[in-house]
Image 1 (cartoon, helix red, strand yellow):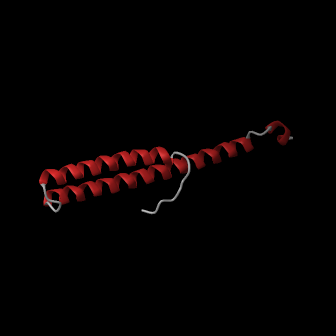
Image 2 (tube, rainbow, N blue to C red; image 1 turned 60 degrees about the vertical axis):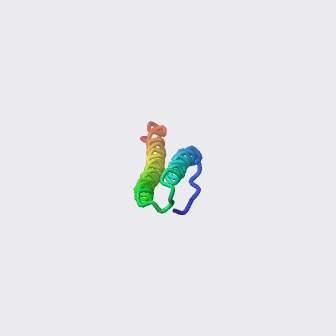
Image 3 (cartoon, rainbow, N blue to C red; image 1 turned 120 degrees about the horizontal axis):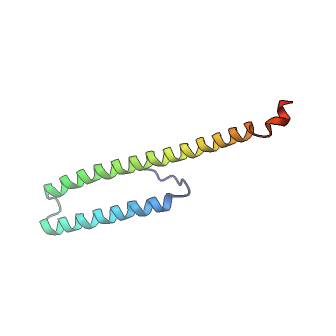
Length: 94
């Protein structure tokens, strides 16, 4: 993925991802040590599984961020529209 800086809220999300990745690497290292060989088929299989889950997690996270941004814009637009409509209706009615 290409890292586009989207501003606020990003650092908190990054730390969550970092924690997951650290956990993932620790587990991976432990598995490699336990099995004694790096190319153990079970390790490779669990790697692929975990990679797929992480990819899914990232895609869901991106979607959530996009939704939040869309909702924010939508709310701003609604507020602006209502603000314009409710702006002293008595004086404009005459």
